[in-house]
Length: 238
Ligand code: C5P
Image 1: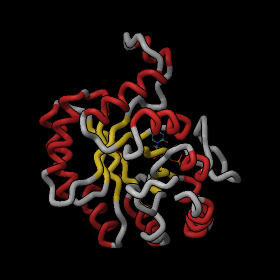
Image 2 (image 1 turned 30 degrees about the vertical axis):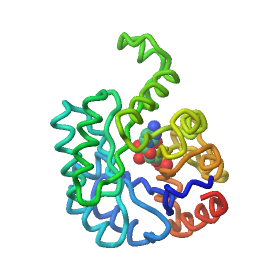
Image 3 (image 1 turned 45 degrees about the horizontal axis):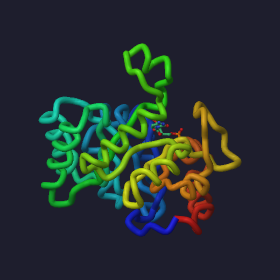
């Protein structure tokens, strides 16, 4: 991977915690030079923007993974609030449609330091039968490509996708499109509940821009060491 528009560190540690204290303990053991942090709905709902600010004060850049999905004005205002908080990345659901994504893009563009704005395409928990039940006459793979293309055409910076989808989306959406991939597991790590996993190096070689990694780091006996090892594994490609 030779793209220069994606900055190191490429690893985003998923802070899936039910309260602030264990998240702060973990973060105290990590280094901002080696990773960014992802704060999702659970942790944000319990600990709020103050915790995000604490992480940023410690030098970490934050991906606020709240997957906004609402009418264009409400989504835009939520993205504006995220930008004012100073996060590095924020996301919305592509299923909110073009007008919603354009409103979100216009809102972040006005910020002093605009965060990267990316979209979730189709949740990986959604299978063919779920789409059929919703009356959507398409396959998950086709819908992912359609939504990723729509996100790009709406001016978004990228999408969340599986590493398996990264090669196709890299080809279809271009070199500058940011592909953020969860489901990453070092070769010697447990898959946990992830169905299809890929190693950090393979994901980057497949076109991923950033790797979301949770339990292989957060549940490691020595989280910093786990992070350092993964950083070394991707050293040549990132
Ligand atoms: O612990 P693990 O590495 O599996 O954590 C992956 C993170 O990425 C979690 O925060 C999970 O919610 C998120 N994620 C995912 N698969 C998706 C989208 C997000 O695992 N399709």
